[in-house]
Length: 94
Image 1 (cartoon, rainbow, N blue to C red):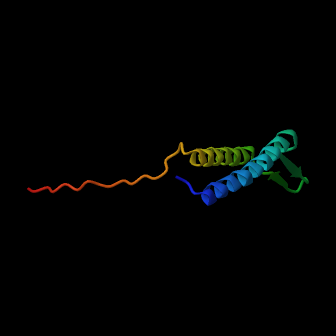
Image 2: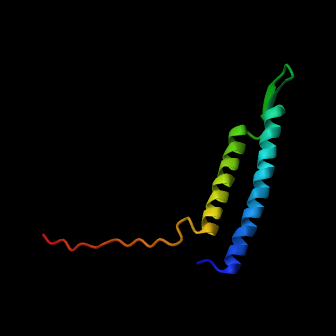
Image 3: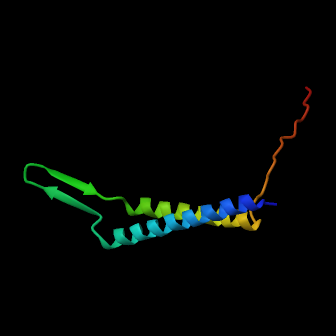
């Protein structure tokens, strides 16, 4: 059973993560509509610059969504609360 303080802390973390997710989604939307890279060729040399990659943004969005789902499961008591794993020792004689 979670204490009130723990539940409040989880709720605050959810709010913060959802705000981060909104920013990440906005950045992803902007990246889809704006130029993602450009190439500068002066004749003497060329350079290519790339803004933050779509894959990197999508990975950030996926990670945030996963983290938020995990926090909701923890808050609602539907996730793993506590897991103790013990290895059984066998006495082998030869």
